[in-house]
Image (cartoon, rainbow, N blue to C red; front, side, top):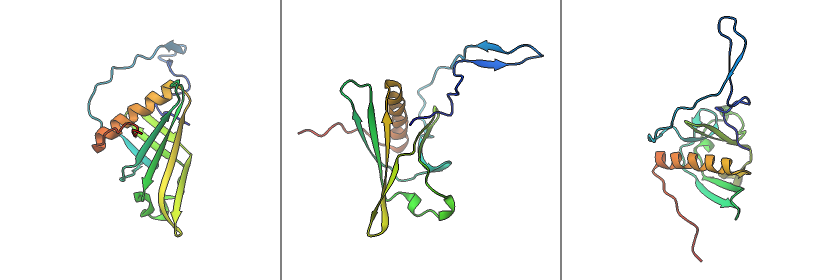
Length: 154
């Protein structure tokens, strides 16, 4: 599931009451985005606490391009060393200057009774969701010095 803090349910509408005037409906005009490097792209298991380990991200997409998914795998993430005061993991939050993407499909893998990795899965049902995730990953890759590796050749 994807969500965005910057897209309220009344997207495209500004409601105001100035000097007793009735509510006015005006379209929101977005400022053009600049291509400035963003170091604010981060992945978080706890809101406000960035995960320092860089994950392996595997992308799958349908042939039609209308749906897809991403597997985000953290080997020995730093949250395992964090104190239990942080609370339970309720999801993975992908935060950048556009807003926030979120998934609650998060699983931990244990080896010999000790946590070894965490896997999160995100499903995309629309082209918009896919493109939003790719924009986040572009920012995250730039902030962490990562690159893209295409599919393995047979």
